Image 1 (cartoon, protein in one colour):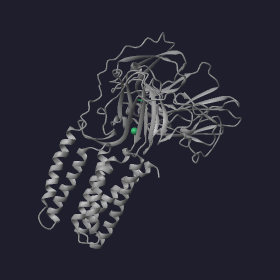
Image 2: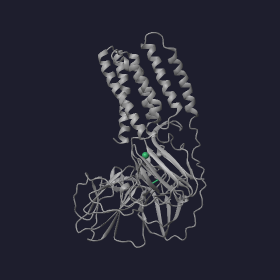
Image 3: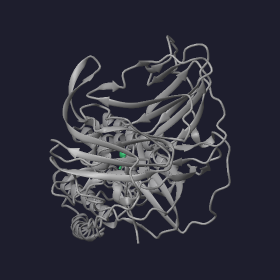
Image 4: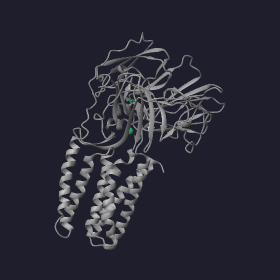
Length: 570
Ligand code: C2O
Ligand code: CU
C-alpha cells in the first residue's frame, strides 16, 4: 500500500469511526440496545483501523502522522477505554463521548494538519469535554461531573490563547525594489505581445478567452541560443493586469514577471519590456503571472523554444491546454520523410498532469524541462506523465510508417493515419531512466522541508480552507532565505490527498530521491515535478540567481489558495 492510499484510508477510517460512535450513541438514546451494540462494534473496528493507519503513517514519516499521534491518538485511546467496555451494555454517554473524541481527532487532521500545535490540541480537548458535559446534563444520571466542566473551560481558554499567539510569523517581505534591467546587449530578436480579451475558436465553437495577439496559445517565440530577446508586453484590456513569466527559463530576477515581487502588474494601457539573453537551448513556455490561475486558464500563455545553433530535422511543439473545456491543440497531421529526425516538444500548460503516448516508432526522451538527459535509452509502447508546467522532448527517427502522439488517449499530432490503443501502456519513471552521473556537490549548506497540506486559514479577511505549506498559507509562509553560492536541499512532503506539481522560479533543481529511494537515472534538472499524495521528494539546487523568487504549486488554483512562498537571497 502506498503512503498516499494509507492517507486516504486513514481519512475514511476516521470518518466511519466518528460517525459510527455518534450513531451508536444515538441508537442507544433511542433505547435500541442490540442495534447500538452492533453499530458500536463497527465503530470500534473503524477506530482500531485508524489506530493502524496512524502507526503506518508514522512509520512512513512523522510529517504524515504528527497530529494523529499527538492529538488524535490519545483521544482515540480514551474513546476505546471509555466506550469499549460498554459495548455489550450500551449507554448513550460513553458512546457519544467516543463519537466526540473521534470527531475531534478527525477535525484536527482535516482542518489543522501539520505541524501539531498546542492550540489545536487544547481546542480539541475543550470540544470533547464541553460536548460531553452538555450530553451528560441531558442524558446522564446525576449532576455533570465538575472535572468535565473545568477541563472544558481551561482547555478552551488555554487553546484560544495558544492559537491566537501561535505562528506570528513575519509575512513575505513584499517590499520590492524593482532593479533596473541588466545590460544584456543589443536585442537580436524582438517580439510584441498584446494581451486582450478575444473570441477564439476552440474545437467546433468560439469561446471567450484572454489572448496574446488575439490567439490562444499566444505566438510561439523562437530564438537560437545566444540571441538576446526583447519582448514588449502590452495590456489592451485585461482588467486584472498581466505580466510575462518565462516558465522554466531562469532569467535574472527583474525579468521574472511576478507582480508585486519582481515588477508591478501591467494594467490596461500600460506596457513592460523584458530583455534577457537566451543561452540555454530547450523547451519552455511563457504565461501571465497576474491572477495566474484565471489568466493562464483563459489563454494567456505561449511556447518559448530556444534552438541549439544548427537546428536539425523536424521540430514540433505540442502545447497542451484545456480552453473552456476543449482540449488544445487541434489534432495536426504532418507527413514526415522516412529517416528524418523528429523532435516533439510536449508542454503541459494545464493545472493537472497529462499522459502522453507516442505510437508507431521507438523514441527517446531527449530532454525534460529544457535539460538534455544523459544516455536516454530507446522506449516503445511506454507513456510519459508530464506535470503541470512540465516539458518533455521526445526524439525519434521517422520510420516509413505513420507515427502518432496521443494525449490522454486523444490524438494530438500524427504523421499519417494510425490507430493505437495506448491506454494500457506502462508509464516511464524518469528517476530510473538514462545513465547516472556523480552529484555535482558533496555538501548541503541549507535544508528546507515543505509539508504540503490543507488547513483552515483564519488570517485573511474571510476564513478559507487553504492549501498550506508547513501549516501556513500565502502570504504567511515564512520565506526561505539563502546566501549566494549555497547548495540548498529542499524536501517536499505531500500529506494531502491531491497531487501538487511543484515549481521553483529562477532555478532548476536536481532530483536526489523520491520516498527515500535515490534517483538512479540521468541527472534530472527539473523546474516542475509532481509530488503525489504520500510522496517525499528530495531535490537540491545551487543558489546562483540572486533575487526574490516565487516557489509554488503549479496547480494554479492551489497557488492562489495559499500554496505559494518565496525564496530570497540574504
Ligand atoms: Cu509557471 Cu510561477 O509559474
Ligand atoms: Cu497543489
